[in-house]
Image (tube, rainbow, N blue to C red):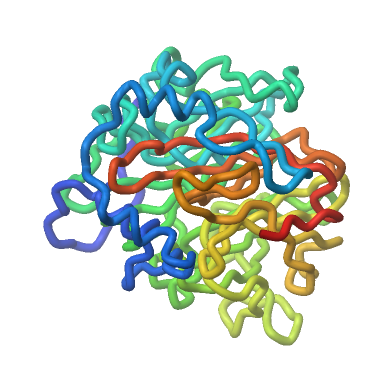
Length: 400
């Protein structure tokens, strides 16, 4: 990959922590500072007693053989992992998370992943983020996602070449990816340790995701009281705007709605936010679209319906909202797709230390496919992405 210079100055920061990925555990363990998952009936508290030993072959084999009972909600099918040993090994990425997808201009499907390591353990060498994998668009989703190549060729390289843990940036983490005409854009957060977002940027590709460059520095981490860090976005099929739901990256804030003309997506001053009174304005008092403690989100149009999947940190689950327009998401019924659970007590729809639900292109309102991340903090494995299938998700609510 060709190095890309910084696009703007960054404020001076204290020296970096020696292993910033360790801080990520606190986001999943339910730490009091970053919050998010402490309400799972104590389910995550037990993880803090685990050792930091790397997993052995038995752990990897157990994961591949589905270490959960195939029961639970009958409308949910928990499919195989889509990353991990023997699955993404050839790309030198056995440990990774997230996987925000979009259809590329040339018709493939590109998934964007977060912190990635060569070995099957968090911190297991050759640290990169974000990275991308291309999936076969002709393969039926019910047969499972199949990878064809990586951004970077045979090895999954970073979209932009930079040094982790330098004097300012520890890692860049993706929010979401979007395709507008012949150009793809990735919203990324410049992190100084997890939960400390310095600013956001947009990186762009004009060759269907094969190469990327920094296009714009967007918002300071404290912009709008820190509500413009984590992002999901999607272009409206008719009105020419891109709609965004944004929140903080600490899993302690609600989500708000913004929009921008597609041709001005790289201009921060062009972004308008939906106000409490229903008007659109730059700044002002945003209307709360999704209340509570919002984590990773995915906004997509599926069969004419605006769907939002998101990690509900306060309730330790992944929820779905469906509406006829972006503005109506605030009034949509909350439907639970996946419940958080304990290790050793998982089911099809009960997942230990889950987060990051993303809607896979090709989904319908009859059959919705998600990829969702899972990270067993402590032993730091599994740290992978799995595929899930839901039948008529807007009609069938799976209760715990």
